[in-house]
Length: 268
Image (cartoon, rainbow, N blue to C red; front, side, top):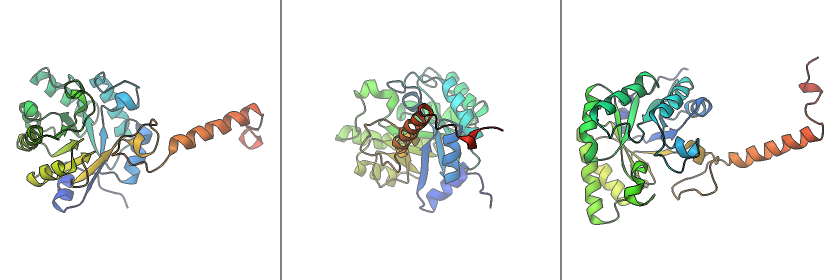
């Protein structure tokens, strides 16, 4: 039986029914096809591709063109999951025209069905403008990777009273601006729970504990394809990097020994 495509209203219905929402990053056709076949609700084409795919030190060098390129590949591999594309650094901060134009490109050229924007009260006017032209927006507060220089690195946010209260206000502002969901990253569990309880849109956590409405992980982290150092919040459900290295080592041995290709791999 063919599954119906996930849409924004479907995500909101899951939230209203109290069902947890699943989200996973994907950056290319095969990873998107795997996540889609597994039944992930939302695929995020994250600017984390800068580090995971391109080997950058952080997300800041990622361009709109890179996000579009990867989103197009993901869209070709997806028939079920909702596709959300990240708006990378400087694609929306420089002015309203840039923000609308770049959000539109991610939909029109990339094939995304929504965009994700980092920031709180400082970015609500931009979100309102994008939502006004019928482009769905997912918010993102807490540890926002595009703000690592201000934050002094990848640090848990909201640990003192001032920042705790500020993040609650940011979340409320994002909801009022029209976001359909909000990513909470790198927050103490109690703060994430408090934010979630005050909103009427779903929260999706990454390093934000258990008391949220959904979870997101990076594809490569989940499958054990990343580096040796993993954040505390990551659970590896497989160890595919070890499997891949072992398989390639075996291939090298067989080629050097003249075992591969065998008769069964040869055209007659």
